[in-house]
Image (tube, rainbow, N blue to C red; front, side, top):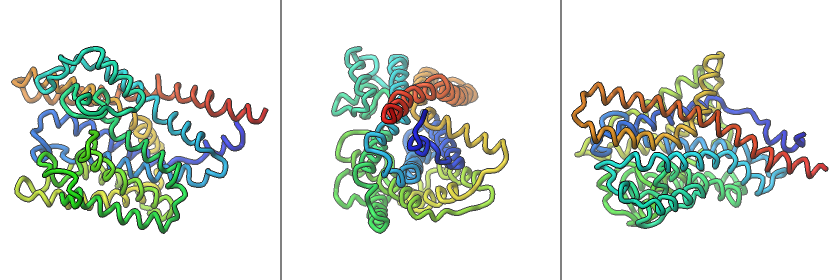
Length: 395
């Protein structure tokens, strides 16, 4: 049996629209990475140019959900309980994605990824162990594919690394912050966001960022520039999401899910603004999106109600697959990149067919990962780490 305490901790209703929006953003992130195969860089990518902003939207959602789910529970929940709940929610898929990335690694060697074929098995296994532990790789250890990334077998885990940090600091410190302090911090972190999006670099912590000037792109490596970018991308979104939850100033509109889905999708699909000559226009766009539009979307999504069985089912499905889709899809994208590098002269329609096929396969993999692995493992861990402990306390 579950104690009243554990029942309470599991009983809060979900914001179904926010779950659905997370799935919408995750799908477009996948499409963005597939289009990236044919791109010379952010300035030149014509289709789904701003897919990377899905990460910043995820952080706003995370701040809101963490505040909603846990702010009023600390009188009946320990730090250990919180840590167990977050690890049960997040870590099983980290391990599965790392296993999948290990299995797929040597299938994704191509001209765009020369280190793959020269990476010895022992080094790959070390990266596997670090990935399963969510311990970031440093220095030359990061470069076993083609990018200097902290989790080379599961590239998207870099954003989860900051999610873990946010959860730790929330449990230790941030949950104690008064609302007024949160408002001050949100304002300060907004300035950090502007510093990044408008390429100001007031502290001189990065260079000219030619590859991604006037964007928030970055955060995936362990060096001064990338850590600064990673924390900048985390802080304002997470804190503003938490602040929205604390203030509970939600906006109710009719058709909230459809409206918010169109906004989120439109933001990520938006072509590059300003071209090569007016880069600042794109920076201004991302500033407005992150500081204003994303918080507004979360307020509308949390305040509105989804009606109709089909819409409710769509939100639930999108919410269910959002995390496994995000964390699992990149090895398949690398397989697509490998194929594209070897078939550059294939007809356009064949490239489109392969891209769509990989997109659908990514969704199928996410659903299978959820049903066959993630949900059963999480239930088993809850029984062993939470419910059994609660029964022992009662006994």
